[in-house]
Length: 271
Image (cartoon, rainbow, N blue to C red; front, side, top):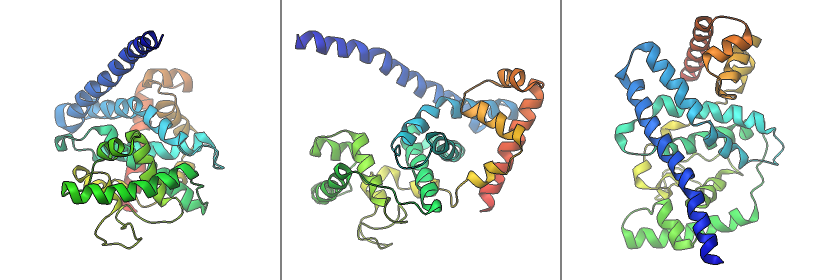
């Protein structure tokens, strides 16, 4: 019975693994276009497709904060802004998976949303205990390895998943406004930072968090701009589908979308 169950699990993993590989392959193609491999219009379309392709990552990150007094849709909206920033700032030549690069950005943006509202995030006891365990094991591994351990090394030592390790590390900021550059003792410039704890190869991730929440900028958009943005990035509709939904031409949709995204990027860069 257990053999049959294991075989069924292996079979079930095939389409899931294939989907992950296809996402990675497609992402690599789109980033090639975005970073100079196509015309301006092709680069914009590649950017739109990258955002749509990785919206499930935003949904997943938003679900980590469920039952904390904020509508899921609002958290997805805020997290998507983190995704926008990650797409714009991602450097494929660093050899880091985009999802690895984007996840701290998305989660950081959602946390900033809570902090801006002045709401404390309740950390489950299991995460409090896990973070203490991570701190202890991380110190041991740092001494034995001569460097900060990666999430996978921590997960193997503790006996949990990499995702749980990242979640445990992220929980450390739930009660305070500490940045990822803050040391474990809460002081900037300490010997061990939160960035150190998630691997030396991610040393530049401090640059992916923006300074303020994007929500006021979205609220300031007119109804049609906001609707087009929501249809494109939250319902993953094509520009042609949006044109039919809104009742305007596809070219008009493209112009409005480009103008709105440019406005948001400019406003964020000025903060």
